[in-house]
Image 1 (cartoon, rainbow, N blue to C red):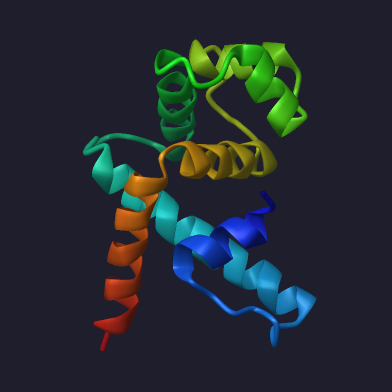
Image 2 (cartoon, rainbow, N blue to C red; image 1 turned 45 degrees about the horizontal axis):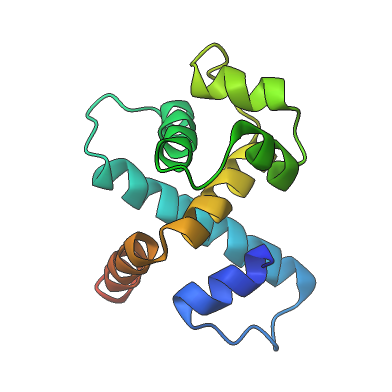
Length: 128
C-alpha cells in the first residue's frame, strides 16, 4: 500500500484534484501531525522523535508481526540500520526511514492510527 493510499484510507481523503506538490505537502503535514499524536499516545515526557522510531520498531518486533529482515526489506534499508535503531545504537534515523516505519506501523496498528487520525482532524476542525 502506498503512503498516499494509506493516508487516503485513514483520513478518507479525495486527492484527485491535488497537484503532485500539494499531495507531497499534505503527506508531510499529516505525517507531522501523526507523529505528534504518537508522542502523546506513548506518553513520554522526554521522548524525542528518534526514540519514537525505536518504540515503533520494537513494537513491530515484539508482536512478531515483522522481523528485522522484513523491516529492512519493506524500508529498503540494511538490516544493520534497523537493528541499530531497535537497539538504540543509532538514535538519528533519516526522515525517509522514519516515514516508512510509521507507514508500516500504521498498517499493522490500523485501529490505533484511526484513533490518532480522529484526534488530528478534531484539532484541525476546532482550531480558531
